[in-house]
Image (cartoon, rainbow, N blue to C red; front, side, top):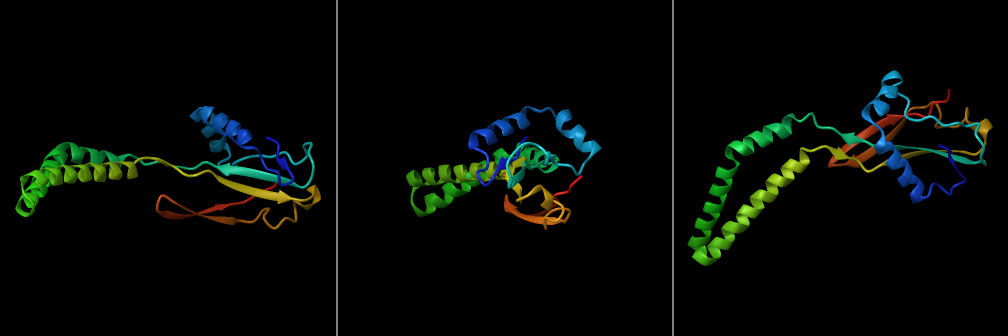
Length: 178
């Protein structure tokens, strides 16, 4: 992959093509090289043709992968008791509605309580599923090939703060020259 020249960056079509190529890869094609060199995310050829200054961008595509235990536990609990709990919620809402408003409106209140119960359970399930983070670009701008070694971001640990899915994460990375 060639770096973009100047500050033009890559077009959305180029980014889309690269993302499609990444997602076409098999697990073995992606994971095996990382098993051999687990800290190498991407390699760039600094000697390749192109104009200077150059931008080198690696895009982190992070997926939070749940081990499945909480989701399986929730699904088992819901399978065993979900319908009975939902029925009890609807019945209690209808009884309260009948006491306050009468039987016609109470039916609507019961249906609304059932819909809220279903939405709550769907929200819990979606929270227990794997989540793909928004792609995170990490860019290094170098004005001249002789300045790689003295660039302040090269061979230094850098921290990126990521706030997604209600959590705050600190990602440590570096631009390392070999």
